[in-house]
Image (tube, rainbow, N blue to C red):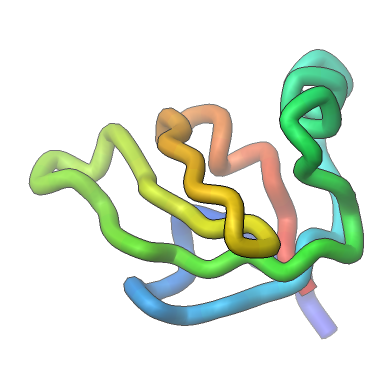
Length: 74
């Protein structure tokens, strides 16, 4: 099964975090409680697509598309 990046999923679609492709981002995300194996849901994308609103185990987060691209899902 091929991993897909977070920005590639549709609104209201869910996935499980497989891994991070950027170590610095991984540290930042894990400090916020976002770990591999957790379920993530795409809530919405801004009109220009630069910001993504996601839910990670009922925790709401807003992240940049560039950062979200470093999060790979199963």
